[in-house]
Every structure is written in C-alpha cells, then in structure tokens.
Amino acid sequence: MQAAVCIEHVSKVYTSRPSLWSRLRQSTPAPGFQALDDVSLTIQPGEFFGLLGPNGAGKTSLISILAGLARPTAGRVRICGHDVVDGFRDARRALGVVPQELVFDPFFTVRETLRIQSGYFGLHKNDDWIDEILVNLDLQDKANVNTRALSGGMKRRVLVAQALVHRPPVIVLDEPTAGVDVDLRRTLWQFISRLNKQGHTILLTTHYLEEAEALCGRIAMLKRGKIVALDTTAALLANVGGARMTLRLAHGWPAGRNAALDARVLEHDGSRTSLRLDSVDELEILLAQVRAAGGIIEDIEVQRADLEEAFVGIMNNVTPSAARFPECA
Ligand SMILES: Nc1ncnc2c1ncn2[C@@H]1O[C@H](COP(=O)(O)OP(=O)(O)OP(=O)(O)O)[C@@H](O)[C@H]1O
Image (cartoon, rainbow, N blue to C red; front, top):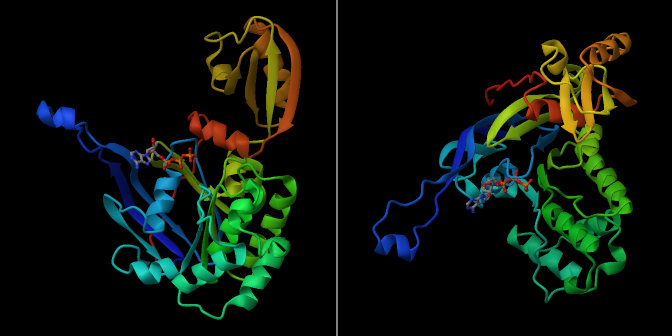
C-alpha cells in the first residue's frame, strides 16, 4: 500500500542572511539553525496520526515542508507518492493544511473565500461541498459575512473549511484548537473524525495532549528537531506504566539518597514531586522509601497515567521510547 505521507531523512537548517554590518566587517556568517535533524516517518492511508513536541521542536517546520512552503535541507517527502519538491502540484492537491496562523484576505466573505480557494484547485462548481463544510463546521450563518468581521474562533473554522474545499485525502491540522472554545472543539473533532472514518488521513499537531490521546492511533514525538518516540498511543501509554503519584514534601525531594527512587521521578514542580508508579502494590513501598530517605510527606495524589505522563517522561528521558522508523512503501 502506498504511504499517505512518507518522510525520509529530512533535515532543515535555517540559514540567517548575514547583516550588512557583518558583511562590511567581513565577519564569518552565523551558522544556520538546525530545526529538523534526520526525521523519518511513514503515515499510512486512513491513520489519525499525532505529531507532538514542545515549543520550537520543529513541528511547524516539518508541516511547512509537507505543504511545499519550505524546502528540506536534506531528505525527501512524498504525499500519496508525489514528491513535495519535484511533484509539487500533485502533492499539494493531495494535502489540505490548516495552518496555525490566522491569515485572511479581509475583502471577501466566507463563501467567496472558499470559492476562491476552490478555484486554486480548478474547482469551479464546488458549492454543494462548500455548503456541506459550512454546515458541518456550524458556519452556515456566516457564509455571507466578511471574514474580517469574524471572531477568532470563527476565523479558525474558516481556515479548516479552506483546507477541505478540494477534498484532500491527507489533512494536516497545525494546532487547530488553539484559543478555541469547547463547542468548536467538539464540532471540529466530530467532523474530522467522520472524515477520518471515511478514509481521510489526518496528521495533527497539538499541545492538548488529552485530544491527541483520544483521537490519534499513532504518535511521533519531536524534541529539538529529532524524533524521540514513535509508536501507537496504546504502546506509549503502556510504557509509562500504571499511574503517577505526586507528593508534596515539606523540605523538597530528598535527592541523592536512594538512586532507585530518584530514577522514578517524572517531574519536580516546587515542593511537589511526581513519581512513576508501575502498580498500586508499589504505593506503600515507595512511600516508605521516601520517608526512609528523609522526605517529609505532606500530601499525596495518585492519577492514572495519561499521554501527558508519557510526553513528560520521554522529554525528560525518563520513559523508554519505542522509536521505530519503518520504510516507506
Ligand atoms: N524561518 C525561520 N528562520 C529561522 N529559524 C526558524 C524559522 N522558522 C522556525 N525557526 C526555528 O526553528 C525551530 C522550530 O520551529 P517550529 O516553528 O518548527 O517549532 P514548533 O514545534 O512548531 O513550535 P510551536 O509548538 O511553538 O509552534 C525554532 O527554534 C524556531 O525558532
């Protein structure tokens, strides 16, 4: 089966143009900034795939390369078999991108904006599908409203609609729910999930890890431009074990007293320290070890492990990741 998205050994280095001052001084130009470092991953048709990472990890850089807005410094990307550089038009036609930034031409209504976008793909009688998108995104009342008169959340709906006008088999959503109310989130995810069930491949970046956990079948995590985890959501959750225990300690964590205990630490946050708990049976043993190490426990909270756990653990190199890089079909 041909991959929906195939990313092979992609690197991206942003080179800064030397300033006039440094050129006059004939000083050496600053080295480029490596935003992506040998990234490889394959997304199969029909997958709901999550791309996660902290701010600046390289998610938008990767999406820009997918969309043909930036060129990789090394490596290649194919969308449904089309190279994003050599076969730009076909690759772009196979892709619908919901960008992070709200950018609109302020002179057009919502319907005009969607008709113009359809025109870019040679679709001149697209109103039936445009109407369907408007209804599904609860935008039908705004069809004839100028985009500049829309609220931020409404504008984001229009961005989603714009990405879908040409019914792309692959839909990329770059933080689509940032600054969006609960209603739109629900409407948006219902619609996107339905498109996914109809066979569309979805690539989602988000900082809302509970959304990624609920929606994505597989997840890749990026850290400083490198993939540090790539697996099914279920496997990533299984790696973090049973639960997280958070302790509030009177004099902070007794670091360096018990190496095995230190290795359990997921996160320190002021007087609170979170530990990995593999099973409930361990609770009493760990509490006894903390006390024996000199920790004075003031409060205890136990939570089931979630994707946030996996994310924090992997980013802090605590949780083993299962990075596998299958070849593209
Ligand atoms: N045009 C550019 N020129 C130079 N550096 C850039 C450029 N675009 C991005 N960067 C840098 O590349 C790194 C990755 O940025 P990118 O926007 O891809 O991260 P991100 O994972 O999408 O972050 P966020 O979650 O904040 O959106 C950052 O350090 C950023 O400052």
